[in-house]
Length: 114
Length: 117
Image (cartoon, rainbow over all chains, first blue to last red; front, side, top):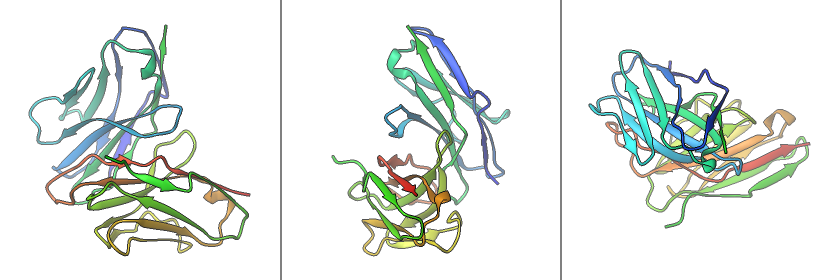
């Protein structure tokens, strides 16, 4: 069975600072994908970044990077130079094996302080 | 290009009524997924299609829930004899391929907020 754990219900960060949102996963499949989505208060789900289990390097997309530690089964999201618009709920998700549906964590509510 | 669209955006219904929720995926996207999201939680998988074939419906809570995608494009999620516990945000997502060796990002629609009174 697949499981995603996000242990930080809420996080605060000062504007312009970096922040790390934690995510650990559990799967027995060697092939899997890890995703981060942002959900602002408007309710949309915005794809941020993807990491494949066989990727050798950590994924990066602009100010977002994924700190992938396979042995520890962790896929933390790092947001650099936080902006007020980064305030939102962040979900870590995984698809593994032949199952293509996403399994989501419970989310982390990030608040960026001015 | 246009993203995933869903209609209606809001639906209020009385207990016992049937509802049909529609999803129009990104043009050309092969796979379509339905999720349900309770307030303050992550989405939970309901069912998905590759083209018109329903591949997995293991997440449907009970037989009051059904889904179809008859022409491999638009999909409808139907809930019969709605109950108050069915109240939630219902989200649709699509991906461009269904390859067994890929894990593609899913693009989500805005969701339908269902309230059962």
